[in-house]
Image (tube, helix red, strand yellow):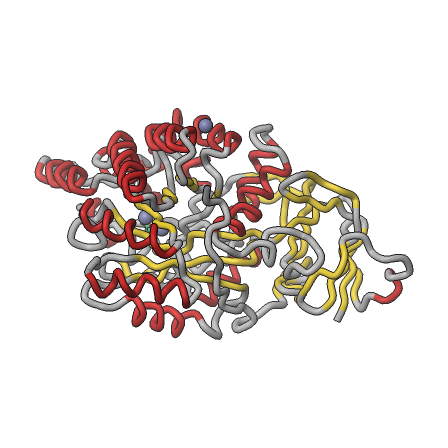
Length: 462
Ligand code: URP
Ligand code: ZN
Ligand code: ZN
Ligand code: ZN
């Protein structure tokens, strides 16, 4: 089976070129069709006037994730189909260690959930919530099993929280085995006090979620995580960075050459505390941690994306339905399940940065695909259009427009955080390992097409 993608502008993290792309089987064969090749293709895709770029890599999703007595509503099937609709062809999801269970049994459990169910390729990070001699040793075995990124939490005491001592020990292990520690950096001990105070004073509305998790406590935790990483020599990746205080800490560490990296998410670039303050409990739709911030943080985050102090945009896709799930926190904001949907809209939303003059086309490709591929050990199999790479390809129409809505999205959730938002640009055609999974006539992929990706180590380490 061969496909010729003809007449488009092929984008990479370093520039763009007018070229035809030849796909043979699951891989890219050539980026300028060899002479006389045009006639041989089984299928020709006309990309005239369109961009041809590597499929998106979303390095932070939570399908079927247990949280707060419920679970995120996208399954590996529905969530990866929605991702494909949005031009994302790889997700890295989080296996979640429950206290008292082993890392390897956790990994088995997540393979059971995902294997045979994904529509696009996928990998795993491991959430470590129970640090002990056994689990520290198991980190090495996870790496052998293709999972070399370990998320820890400075937030959520009693649930996922680890003490500084536990974090230090896990970082020492990562220093020895080549793993990268991913950090949810919010000071959960202080936050829990602020939450208790708010509730005791009768402040129960969703906006209190943000008011009890001030940006300073993200900055403080980020600083602490960076110092622990420095002492141990472990690489550190700050997930879902939302606050300028945290960004300043990351930038300062990177300026010294420390192996510190960070991602942000579209919700922090486009939404704000004003959404959390919407009346009639509507704000619950926007409860995620860290919380949506004051709008003054947004230009700093765009700047961080330009300077590479923010290297990656992931979604932290963790959808809970408004009806029945977000409802759990009516009258007590601390019981609203934390998380927002977004896996479908990352490529489109970050493209608005190109439209608005915040990012170059190359930087759009870099933060959504090429850097995640390198950071998470998938490059050059993923993250680039080059001979030999997987044919994960997004054909993007820069002139089309669309309006985001729960009526038309494909995520298995009953609301859109971006309801009514008008965007320039639109996904035209998506290939996953050489198969056309999305085009103008609909979805042609399917459950089970996606394969597990055993990942190599982070390629950015000094
Ligand atoms: O609120 C969020 N972000 N939910 C998902 C879990 C996490 O902390 O990433
Ligand atoms: Zn987190
Ligand atoms: Zn800098
Ligand atoms: Zn997350």
